[in-house]
Length: 198
Ligand code: SME
Image (cartoon, rainbow, N blue to C red; front, top):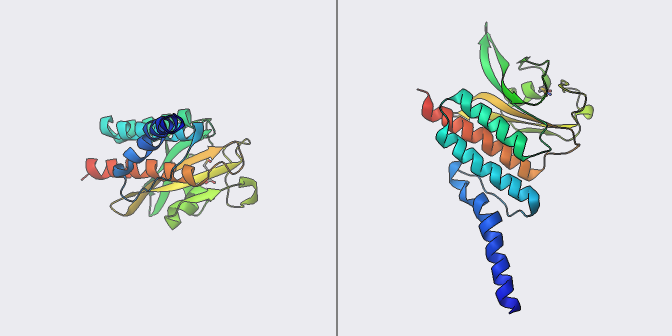
C-alpha cells in the first residue's frame, strides 16, 4: 500500500513538475533543465510553457516581446521589472533602445554600450547577474527599490541584437534556475527573429 502511494506521488510529481519543464527542452538546443520542486517550479514550468505558446502564436516581434515581458512579470512575482533593450545604430555607434517592458517607467530609455550593466552585457555578449546592485559601480538606477538584476543578451545567427533585462526588489533574486529561465526566454525571442527576418 505504502509502495503504491509512493508511485502515485512520483507520477504526480513527474506529470505536474518535471514533465512540463523537460517537455520544453526542444525549444532551445542545449537547455538542460534541472529537476526543481515547489511552487517556484510550478511558476517556472508555467512560464516555460507560456514562452513556447507565445513564440508559436506571436504575430510580430513586438507582440512577442510584450508577451514575454507580461508572462515573466506575472508568473515570477520577484521579477519586478522586465524589459527588452534592442540595439540600434546611432551615427556610427550602437545604442541600446528600450522596447516593451513591464514595471515602472525607467529614465534609461537609451543606453550606450559603455554604460550600465546593460551596456556591459551587450558589449561582452555574456549574461550578467548582479546580486546587489548597490555594490556595482556600473549600475544605472531604474528604481530606488531595485536590489538585484540580470541582463541576458539576445542573439540572432550568433550576432547580438539586444537583451532581456530583469530587476528585482530582492537581493540575489536570480539563482541558477532564474538564469536558465531568462536565458531560455532570450533564446526563444532570438529564434523567433531568426525565423521571421531575412
Ligand atoms: N540597471 C540597468 C539600466 C536599466 S534599468 O534597470 C531598467 C543598467 O545598469 O544598465
